[in-house]
Length: 95
Image (tube, rainbow, N blue to C red; front, top):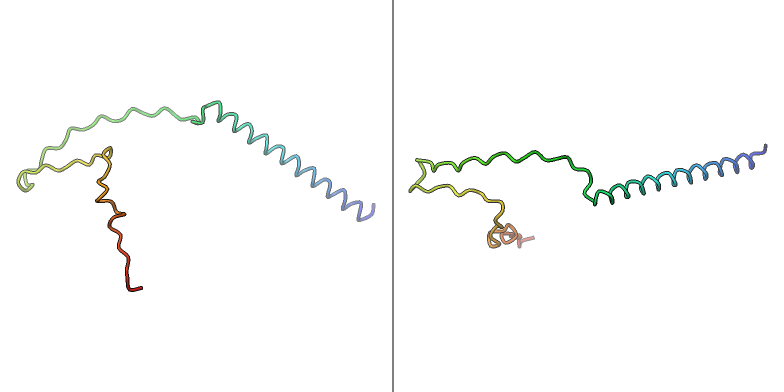
C-alpha cells in the first residue's frame, strides 16, 4: 500500500468515527429532551420535608427604650422603593 492510500483510508475512518459520535450525541440529546418533556419540564424533584413549626414571637426586651418591640423582618413585603440601594448611589465628580 502506498502512503496516499493509507492516508485516504485513515481519513475516511476518522470521518466515519466522527459521524457515529455525532449520531450518538444527537440520540442522547433527543432522549434527554423527551424525558424532560414527559415530566412537564419540571424534572424529577424529591419530596420536600414539611416546614418546621413557627416559633412564637419573642417577648419585647425589658431593656428596650420606651418599651418598643422589635419589628420582625417579613420577606413577603416588598421593600420601600425610596430606601432602595439604587437610589443611594453616588458617583465621584473629580475623576
